[in-house]
Length: 253
Image (cartoon, rainbow, N blue to C red; front, side):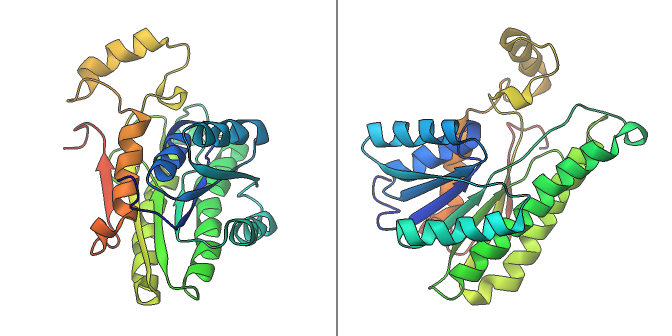
């Protein structure tokens, strides 16, 4: 896959760490010029440095997806600086401390909805608006196996936002396939990032828990999720439209 995205520009939100960073690096290795976006300039620059050290091309863009003007400006800046927008990966997501539905704080609920759902919708909106008048493109949204596919106590707000991402992805795919914009989602299970750990849990504790909690016996690597995202964005998935690909080590099998 060293040149499968050659000549294309790929935007990855949440590109400063975890799945986003792994995905940005994978796109760059596959020939894309990568735009990494997020709120923290320092971590975005670290991702760019890693890509450039491996011989790839990347640029960092700071933006907060909870702000409409910032998202609109982000897409415009990526197009201007990188020369276009052919692929977008909407990966930003937040997770507040677990709470039963009756105990979720208003601020926590609003924060997750504003970021995980409204922020992702806002990103898609401006990405699609560019793509549909510039030859089309591919969009992959990062949802979760917690939501449409699985529920867990204490995760009602997170599950609600990620289930909504799954449904929004499928609806957007139907709305815009005739515009030449192909839209899909990936729903990871536990991934080897801090977000999959429980409060106070050490990496060793987490590994021990997942050995029995998941059929695969372990968390996914960020590279495994990135591979699924690249597959959905690639020409190999040209007939894949409105799919929510679950990558969770058999947790929802």
